[in-house]
Image (tube, rainbow, N blue to C red; front, side):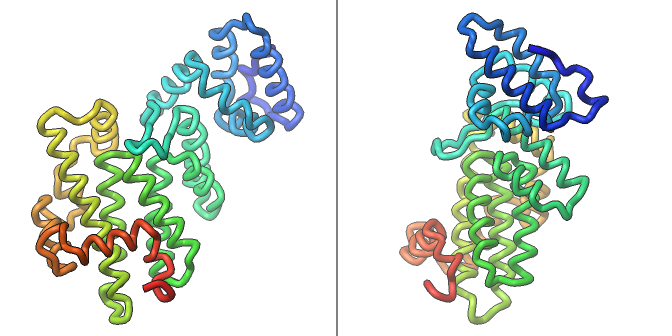
Length: 292
């Protein structure tokens, strides 16, 4: 299997991609192949080349993820570039962002940052569930909803991204998701005929704020999981609570009081609050004019 250590200096053609992929497959089909040698070779490929190889042979993605030596090298490359370098699995088991996902996602994310009009690159980055891309797309879609709240696909996409953020990224993802929903709730507050939608977004935000508060309690008691600690440190880098809460609230109690007042409830056992949460989790808010 040939190496491509000089590929940065030349254009990698489709024929090259096919040759690399076919060589990897032939090499791995040898039951006694050298895992370290294979990892050394593949790790020299640029992220763009890895993306193209997987597009050509999608089955190689699973093979790459199961190669510990390769994961180790990609993880080191991500760390060197100041990106989170571990595999992230959702608490509920429904979401995952592997080292390979991050390696591909950062490639697409950087392409989008260099050319923001290339929205397809942001979408591709979000498919890998990297934090940076999910945050960028939720921010972008809040703006889109304010321009035209009737675009159902945008609301559906935002809903899914908010769920991924809160499932995967512990405190930072939960807080960002809550702030996004708060912004939408405030937007709908100015629309007299959209008050039920406002309440749904505020109820979902309150649920996330309560979860985030519990996560900080766990962290204060040194009971937060190692991955929760790592992600919090990686994303927040020592920011104070008010900054973490987007400058909107001084602390958790002020945030909770805001939502309790907005929803006119005294506790989360209130039937109205439970009904609103059910509407959020069933995506009722997405088709608010037809379903509320």
